Image 1 (tube, rainbow, N blue to C red):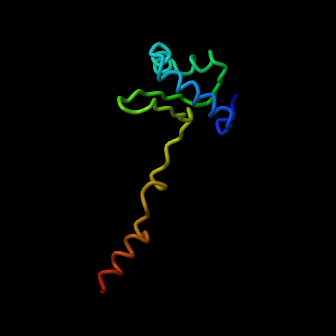
Image 2: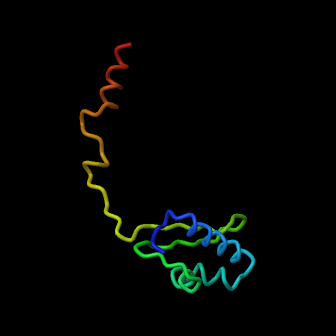
Image 3: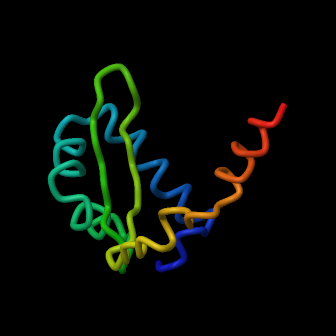
Length: 95
């Protein structure tokens, strides 16, 4: 199943996570080898890194992270020299 926005996929993962909360062996497998554990349950997710973490006092954390993330160039991250923020600050000094 490759549509990560599918309600059916969300339901299958939710059911598996609930089961893992009560089964320490399954929880350990899910944390150590999430892709293989999901595949053994008929859940195939390609193109994503599967993150499963256990934080005491909280339910299992489950996330999908795209495998081919590209970093943004500095020009997209840093505002230009004459950004609105700078102009707005200079404008405020007149009052």
